Length: 382
Image 1 (tube, helix red, strand yellow):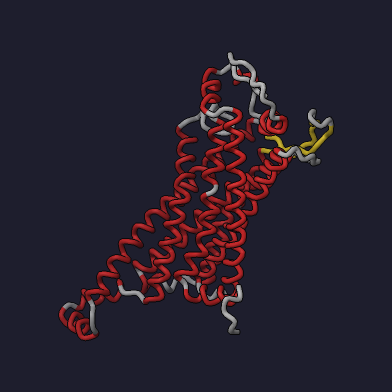
Image 2: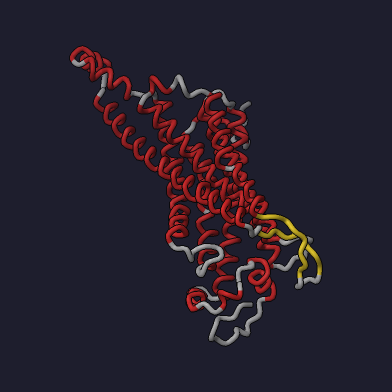
């Protein structure tokens, strides 16, 4: 294991963890060993502290992922039974499918670290291979979730602001096409990872065998291409989606308050007729502002979903900004340990959001609640 420059070697032995650091993370290059800043950063989080925190985070992350897998499996089953005649069912189903897939990909990534920690002998490099076949896709799919949430929020925002015009445009077919476009633009670029990385057979000195490994491709084209698609898909896209969700959620909350105030001001049908006769323009404006109880419940549910997303995705956005501002805060930078631990901690936000959504649907959507209760046999009626 790497020993801090100018310090005595730690006599505590971590065989599996040594392998994880030296061989699997592959980030202890000779040029950085003498760096004073690296020594300072290592003191911030020592070897033993790093591994204790990292393993705790992985086990906690997997517990949350298990909840997300179960919750979104139920969400998908309920929405399939509800059908897709309503555009909102299509977008919410797409959101549930992506949340389910995110939890599965993170489970696969966690498994890679777990197998390495317990020194399980496999014919492939468990951390590197699981990252290239799961972790990288997870990063892109989290952006897909962000954009689907942005679409749902933006669509509800348009419906409540311009109800008479937008309802004609938002159809099940249009929503389905929108979901496909979002997936194509946000998740499909994850396969660009295989342009800048490749699978090779390498000799593992720890086991004295040749195994399958995943390594980056060091070429001018690969490096330039990686910088471009990471800047677009890893920085611009998630931050833009987060901004759209935030703005639309604020607008929805403001508009809901206006509608609630308007409903309180109209106490009878007689007062509505008087208002119409005295001020036709005000009546027309009120008619546009007025939405059905069903639509209002749907908007409130979307606000709840968006609020949970904002709370869970804010740490991710902060980490993205930090990695952009501080060039030493990344996987191969000086503060690599803090980056790894922070990345796993903020990644828990997505499965938490995906797990909580089912509670929002159950509480605020009567049809969902009815089908859910029949699905899990809480109601015995056919």
